[in-house]
Length: 374
Image 1 (spheres, rainbow, N blue to C red):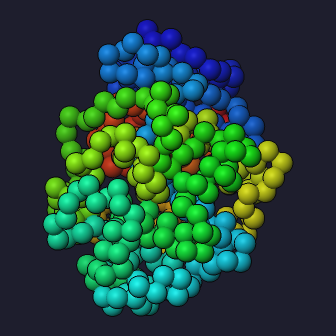
Image 2: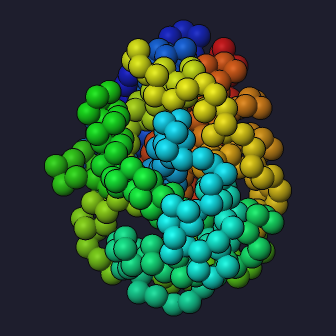
């Protein structure tokens, strides 16, 4: 039996049982799950090991790579620009980033890019995979590229390019890279253990990943799915792991604890209040998470509903029953979600990766048990 640390009040005994069962079934190596209700941490559980040899405990200081759950952090940073009056979601990308108008992209809006409608899910032509660590080179390629489908006609998930699209608009208006902004605006004042690009000083806390033994099921593979996920250059390779960890890519290279993800999402579920400060107005939370498009995604084998960078819970409901719930999931199983109807936020991280593209069964069991307890 795995030793479970943290706390779970009696009403959440079912969540603790589900957490233990995830380990007992062999599905976990190390994991953490945290819930925040009305601004208060009401459950926080962790267990297992931070390394594959099982010599290092997974504890309350362990960081994990959260892959695409990072997109929720990027969406929040853009939303704060809108809240401050520096950006409008309906503004054309090229007004902020003039070079982006190339290739027939002059009319694409910020909200279309954030809701995966820009037609830039990946690069169809070969490139050196190490280029993903070169911000300026990727931004230049995206600016020159023609869309792979008519922008605004459908969503097609942008697994890595999303971070460069959102991050370049943010950089041009704010002056900072998103990782620097996250550190200065959330880590330093609120103590949130959230990172886009990990400083070398934090490497010792990082959990070692156990990769899945199979690829996810992408359904019927088309050209845009192939460009997004299945070419040799669709993900980074050819550079030292330590160099990549430090690279600020706001779509895929985030690092976090479940506790800090839950605190942040708990704030978004609670009218934007975090430790007595409002990080986003209620009106902007509603606007950022409003549905921009719903339908069969061209890259993912799901019908999807997208806000301005946030995944919306319907129609697949990976995060409980809430119709207004939003968040994001990451490759391997991590997720973060906010339910404003119940003022509930949650975060789940792990280092044994599964193959589900969305709605990994491990956090689903925990979240379903939590809702049964509310």
